Amino acid sequence: MSVRTSRLEGVVEIELRSFADDRGRFMELYREDRYREIGVDLPFVQDNFSVSKRHVLRGLHYQIVQPQGKLVTVLKGAVLDVVVDMRRSSPTFGEFDRFELSEENRRQLYVPPGFAHGFLALAEENVVMYKCTDLYSPPHERTLIWNDPALGIDWPTTEPLVSPKDALGKTLAEAETFA
Image (cartoon, rainbow, N blue to C red; front, side, top):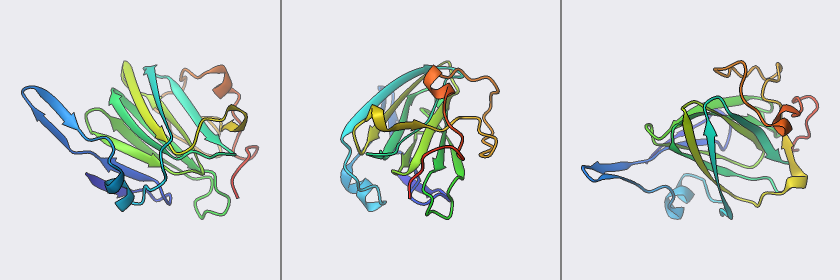
């Protein structure tokens, strides 16, 4: 596997090795010792799976208590994955980075606790799996609005399909943040 670090401290893009032959393909999605070597060393306690059609935008989510780190893998399709630094003490507070993850490019993304996370589904059918470092806690979940002008995220659609909950997300100026 090869690794690229983001300008946002702790965010890591990982390109997985794939072994293909006439029978199909094999990839190792996670191996604790190898991930620990690249700084991904929090234990994973929950796995999530989502299916989204084209133009669905999920996020930008974070938990203010029980913050979750996430290891995001696209099993089918492609997504534009976005992370926003929500840590006030960080030199990159309020900044974002974008990553294209797909079944073709075999890239994963590690998003540490302290970041808002979301993605836009780019293919007709998109299957995303993500491992989390803490349990989902609905009372502590927060949503940053996807189109906050202060963030200036350039999404490749102007009218994504968002859930009613995500449509009520807060701007960065209004949002609860981490110290």
